[in-house]
Image (cartoon, rainbow, N blue to C red):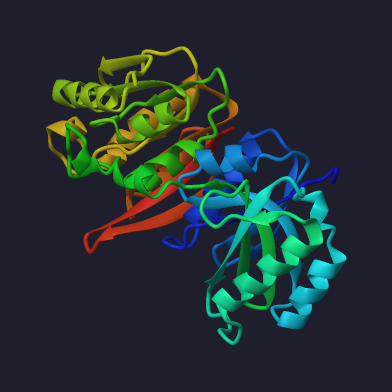
Length: 347
């Protein structure tokens, strides 16, 4: 067997930078050495020292599929045929196992090769090479063929996101709703970008009705939420209970006066405007007062991920508070709001 597994990930194409940024952060947090080998539209190939495809795929918000890479070749029938001949497929599939294969195209790739026709050809070749049986409905292993521009990739799926998993957690599906709540994928990516480790205390000090905290608890974080408004704290508790979850604690309090000695990771989306929910202050002023507090409870090298309206100058507040901007993502919400997601490292 291979000593250095090659993995593949199919990431969402709905944002230009967040899916790959999140995947990289999760791989870094997995404590495995890795190198991104291929980064095409929606398709990422990674060299690693351990097979973390399932764990990384399940944890990520923007990863749709993950698995073991088998081969990459030129996107022609001759090229694919040669690659099959040169690859020891019995290394990946035994004769006692069943399989199926599906082919996908990502990006502006050629449609000269019939997707369904190629599935039939590859299915026949794999069956002859390994003596394994085809099972279209419930196979032991699922092969995935992917066309990306100038290449064809073959892999075996280890993780595939259930289609209903995100839809069931949409903000309006929860008992407590607030219009500013982040959608699940974005909230999950915020948590992952903060890189919480096992045993860490994860904090969302502006938890609202718990969108970010919910995603943190779903991936096993020991999470604490905090908000200045009692109704928000009650809403978070109801939403967590709706999904059979509980945080380590929910606190009604001012995030500019954090009652913690140390936390391992912070991800948060402070309120915008100048109303009661914003402590009757501007977002910039809240950040100027909150970030030094956050820095005092984060060890050097740990992360805080914060969202704010573009134009808030959050990076300046971060620099002034002992943080370094490690990454930045812009998320369009509507014509009057684009969120700036900053990944900050404590220095």
